[in-house]
Length: 467
Image 1 (cartoon, rainbow, N blue to C red):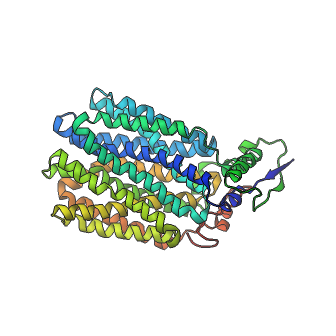
Image 2: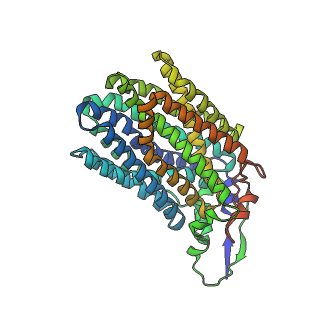
Image 3: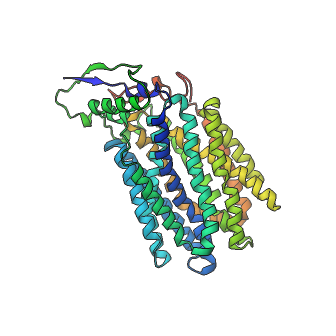
């Protein structure tokens, strides 16, 4: 039985950046914006609950742990759904889920109900994080991928910083409930706008659905102004006539622990665990730290809003520099700078220095987070790419379940110095490990670890280079 091998990877990588990519950037970016907004609102919301007695430090920790548990569950489910059922379905399901539940959270009668809703809401949020970063790898040419990972991070950064700013403006007047309304309505609007988003041709081809992949590619090429693809289709023989094409190359998750792949999996886990712990330790606890150090809620939220604007500037630097420096140098550089400024930050006492150094620290933490989460999917071929990225985020977010209690313990025993210096040490460890590992994501390396019949993925920054 003869089918058509559409060469989706090479054709997508050969496309010029066009209105298709810009539209995709907006659709994916809006999802990450509201995902980041809803995720980050916890810092302002929890800080505002303390003076009213609606919550306590212990219940705040439970709220954050429930969030991390949901994020971990969502990350795990997203990998399975995306590789098994399709990127498009998983993408829309996750966004709709957390949008609806965010609206429900606005009407929680007590903090216990709020924590339960947050757990379910975070499942959708966790899935969205995995899929958004993976979609950049799926649709954007490798030569421009660093730029668009940075731009995706800018969307996420705006979600983080605007969550802090809006919290500063809205919570004192309308209470914390308004934050969930804003996040929920925004997520559902984004869900509606991207309802016609195309399925990934790479995934369709990896599942043996060649006709659908070809149709999707031709539509993308037409929108990109390409009338004849640079890489033409070539007939291949289906080794099992009559076999179900939608099961062509589905492989079990155990492939991530197989010989030749496990090294990539371990590196993905290390990078993801550390970039998530560092980011959440900085963003999730700053307002609470300020309140416990004697600031009132309004001043705390104001300081936090100023510092969190670094979550826009950091990814913007990635968008400008990542393709020039390469993703390896971008990760090593941002991790090193994050470690340095984390080490300096606890010793700042003047308000201007607290804001300035805090801003740079957040910018570098955001850059490191963006490049790590965006680069990890490139470690794996199409057939199990989202499960590789999903597993890494699942483990990272499972680790975060205990992190509020770890951070609280460090803060209680050693103050903010103990918390931030721990984060600094982790950034140093991640940077050294990644610099030494030199995992190869060239097309040849990915083809070597891909399941039989899977197309070679050209995902490296340059052919035969260590990414």
